[in-house]
Length: 109
Image (cartoon, rainbow, N blue to C red; front, top):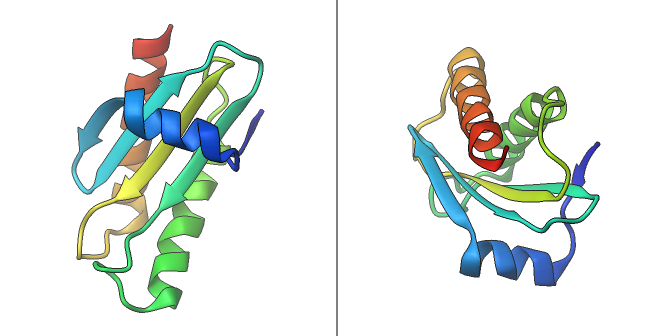
């Protein structure tokens, strides 16, 4: 089961030692911790979207897409960063995120 990643040490390890997969406006950083918990975090930088309403909407959409994915191996922690100043339609965002998560599954299996 995917759960939000809240452990500061794990987040630091993802950014220090993790691998990167990039596609379109989304950057995915991940690290295989080889334990039993999966974790994820979503970030939308304030420099791209000043309005908290816009940032939170994109975060909610990304979390919804991630929670419907069940094929991620245990022990993987990943961080999704939305790096575009333009809003993306949900259908396009879903297609990009699902393809990134499929690449993540391929790389970690």
